[in-house]
Amino acid sequence: MMGLSHNALWVLASMLMLGTAAGLAGCFAYWKRQSLMSDALAHAALPGVVIGFAILGFKSLPVMLLGAAASALLGAWAVTAIRAHSRVKEDTAMGIILSVFFGLGIMLLTMVNRMPGGGQSGLDGFIFGQAAAMVRQDMRTMTAVAAVVLLVVLISFKEWKLYLFDPAFARGIGLSGRLMEAAYLTLLVVIIVIGIQAVGVILMAALLIIPAVSARYWTNAFGTMLALSALFGGGAGVAGTYVSTLGDGWPTGPFIVIAAAGIFLLSLVFGTRKGLFVKAMQRRAQMRRLKPQAVRRDPLAEGEALP
Amino acid sequence: MSYDGWILLTASLVGLVCGLVGALLILRRMAMMADAISHSVLLGIVIAYLVTRELSGAHMLLGAAAAGLLTAVLVQWLHARGVQQEASIGIVFTTLFAIGVVLIATQVGNAHLDVQHALMGEITFIPWETTRVPGLGEIPESVLTLLIVLLVVGGLIAAFYKAWKITSFDPALAAALGIPVAFMHYLFMTMISVTAVAAFDAVGAVMVIAMLITPAAAAYLWTDRLSVMLLLSGLFGVLAAFAGYAAAWVLDTSISGSMAFATGVLFLISFLISPRHGLAARRLRAHAAAGRLKS
Image (cartoon, rainbow over all chains, first blue to last red; front, side, top):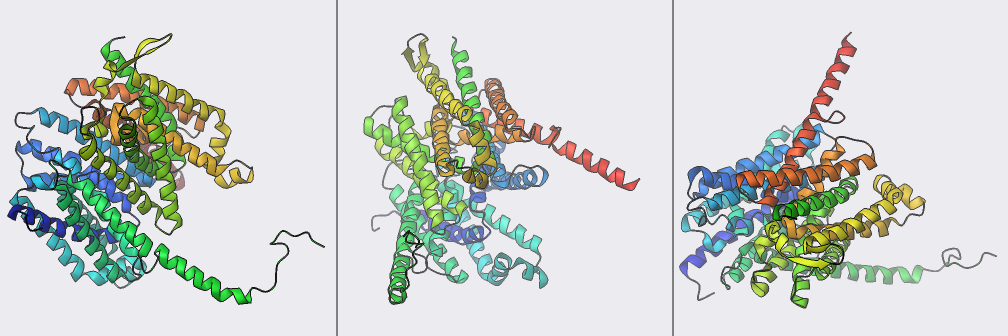
């Protein structure tokens, strides 16, 4: 990485922070079994980004992020409302919100791109992510927000653990379930919102899902899983971003996802807790232990004729 | 037929075929699987293009069917190895889609197949890419593909109607009756993939999901009968196609985006006022029940 410019180093550093924070938040989503909710939220953020741009008429990251957060939260609320007030199931509700909000986003995007000056808005970059298009100010925002997320997770580690694994007990000792739920949703939305500029709305969910699942193959301890997931997320962010800068106009998001998928494959095969390799070894050892004891043959099981 | 006529016909066919498949889809609780398949279909199309160097209907359908099946098999395989169903869907489709996008960005890079097209479809180009069919004359290639897919998918649903019904509502009973449940599952996955790729040209990867899920979910709120739901779902799909086209014409914006949004409006209306399962009806019934209890 000797030949990297000062700016490229900044991009890599902020992607490292983003990947780390996404890895942490992804663990929460994993244990809440809401991996795909993050996908729905990321898609639902698109109309907010475009409206944020349209209101101002120029690109201002804080306003666009605010719009993204508002529309992602509206999407989350709509999923809950559909599930609570009709017989439509949660997965269908997520599919509806994801695709309808995205459709609205594309409608608005097409209209904004026709506005004077809209063509150069760089809004298209929000779909697949364009880390190279970020300016220094954007990176500072991203890095600062990611740092806050890291801090929040570290400080309230015990509370998260209780909330995720024994919510009844957590309530019993006075930890407000509603507060934690709100904190969780805010965390998820914040990560998605700062990530979409670099990774894009379509593939943002992968940065939340894949590191957490990969980490699960190496450990059963929640703390270790968080640390590993953060490491994997950061690694995928940096590796993917670096590769995407090698070509002209290559989108960042897809390369990050492929890097994350590589980490996942390695974990799937070689993971020390649930990896395929370890499992196969365990099975062989077990077979060897059992063999001397396998004495009585069962005629029924072997399909022989009964006397 | 006129230019607008062809576009409306294409959009209506997309709405109809997606609506039919979508009704079974949401009853089988596979909405997110459709999300996954509609994304990974892109990889199938790109690979089919890289191998044959042409964008013809048959190759793309084959590639898409293969990619769809691969998604279904991979998700199942990961799930069997202890990954949560949701998470395995999330891993598989984002990875396959990312590979597809990267291949387009690095290998293809021509006017026929670009990332924009993959996402939003190119319904406005469809009337110009025609092919000659004996008896019908010059018709757009996409319309022909959609017609064939509609015939095949509609035929399969009609031919095995009872089997679809039983496997969707009570898989255990279906297995006990000797219906090949696993075969039906993968057949259905193939039907989703083929539908997704036929609609892909017109509406793109993400908006296919809207056309598949939302009209069906709206129909689900109006009826308890599968046959009625299938009809309503197809009808809602066509209705959304027309409404979306009109909205796009008025606002001068993306047709596929407007169609997806129109399905959402249809769903919202059904959610609020459907006499059977709508919000208003539920509230009224609850109110009446409370009144009866009081007196």
